[in-house]
Image (cartoon, rainbow, N blue to C red; front, side, top):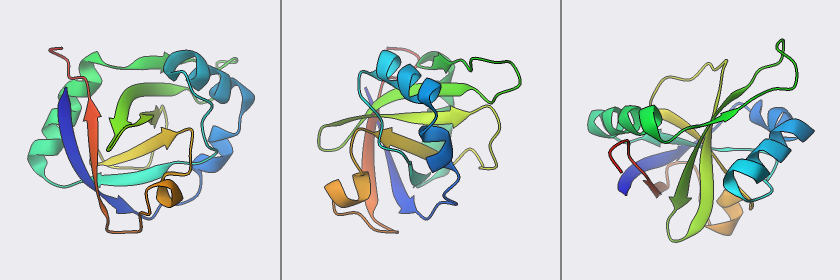
Length: 132
């Protein structure tokens, strides 16, 4: 298990529409075992080392989120746990405007309110790495 630390950041709001698509919700339920809250929490990794570790994690711990039609945007899911113990995941759309240091975290709950987070809050994420 690898711990990554990041800072909560404002998002664009575009993920909410993606997260409400029935096939996305079904895929998350099947892959991660929870019904996702319709939105994401953007977390910016704190340093270059964390970005490098995240790159390694993505190589081995991803699950495919396949769209029902080839012209739709699919993505990858990376299971993780948001500290203290909230089952979650990172969704990585096939089309994204973010750099490699931003993670779009999904969970069954609204993470900002559930964990009393605001922009700038530090968050710990635990995930399997490629070597696990």
